[in-house]
Amino acid sequence: MKILTIENKAGKVKLNESVYKESVDKLLEEIGSVFGARAVAEGADFGVLMNSAENAADTMEFEIHSPGGSILDGYRVYQAIMDLRGRGVHVTAFINSLAASMASVIAMAADEIKIVKGGRMMIHEASTATWGNAEDHARAAKLLDEMSGEIAGIYAERTGKKPSEMRERMKEETWMSAESAVAEGFADEVVSGKFDTKPKDKGMNILDRLTSPASAEALAEIDTLKAEVSNRENEVAELSDKVSVAEAALQEAATATAELRNNLATAAARVTELEAIASRVPELESAAELTKEKIGIEAARQLAASGHPEPIAGIEAGEITNAMTREAFNALSPRAKSDFSKAGGKITA
Image 1: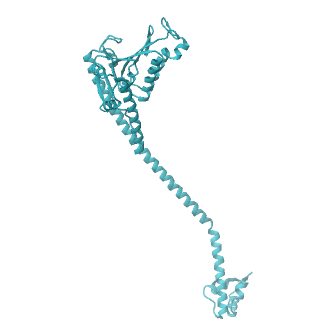
Image 2 (image 1 turned 90 degrees about the vertical axis):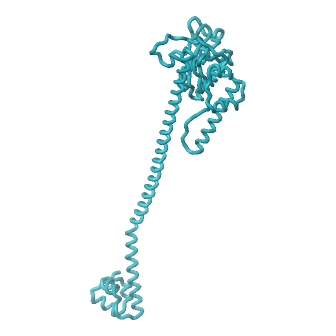
């Protein structure tokens, strides 16, 4: 859709949708093609007008019908208009029929602001949806407060009123009729019939019918649009709540996953520990056998030293009667040595 036309040395721009990245990109591209450095460099041809440094378009009519939108994207348009004015381009904003929220801020950049009879302007505080802990919400609140303060300053500069007064009006979400907007300094003139008109029929959509409406019809359509904006805000809030629930569930899942990984790591460490112990079992068994033999030898020595005539049960009758070392045999009493020999015992090295 072509949103910019050239008539003599005047360009006309239309913002007939919400303020968001795509719409702003398209709008700024059209403005740049006529008023920007690219237009002069390319020598753009608009009908009988050849755009050059000496005959470039020097006035711009900016028609606005928008419920607003992104603050940061809106600032891009605001600054572009201020830059045009700085280069000597005279900018006139025509509100036809709604300049709400960020769209009203964009209108403030113009040299002159005109509003159609039956039109509306709306100002309010900056808003957003956040999710997170107390610090996350505190940071978001601080940012919103700063943005609202900046916007209040823009309104105050235009109207000649104090920023604090503008801030209070924003907190109340103030809707102004065309006459009220002029009376309070937000617009300079109420107009009727300045805009392009189209034959109206029952098949026209709401934006077409709002292009050049009768006063009563405009009021009705604006009320409908206000309700639609409110519904969209409710839908956004509902979706935001759902996103918050989903993010909380993801956080719980992440916590459970981390806990499971910790448990698995602990179990793996325990398995490694048990495997190390198991690898020492043969070594421990050998040590136990050696200790058992030493105990038998010491018991035999103690028996011989005490002159005990009988072998100790479980030592001489078991280990001793089967096989023993030379050292253990020499430690036996004469009686024990005789019993060992009769039992067919063998002496090992």
